[in-house]
Length: 139
View 1: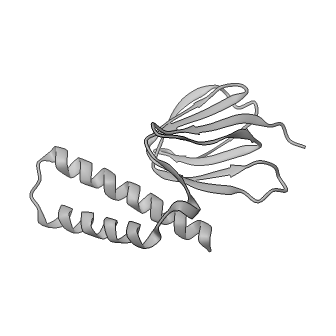
View 2: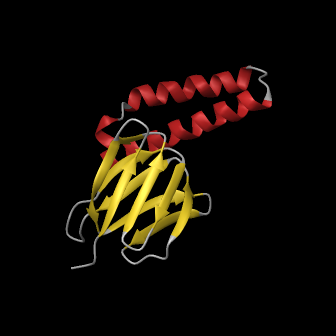
């Protein structure tokens, strides 16, 4: 049996997950990153992405969506601090697709200031990650 470590996903409104796990996988600006027990300590900025949580080699992994945030990796504990997190079962795929389409249309037709464009672009990226999470995990 592989070594386990404590893992938590924390948002401003709830703790989505808090348990011992074998591994997690998420995305950073530099690509996909996996963490197992004994990983080198570091603080990593994550992208809005699907989060894969594996409790053991034989167990079916759990998936959730996490928004941008930070993941602190310590020798025996990993903590993800993000603005939003939801289990794949909580994602309303049709609503996410509609919201993304509306935001893309707004971005294309309006002449916003740079701040508004950046905010809309970030919202579109979060919606795309939420959609990716829902589609990938429901297959």
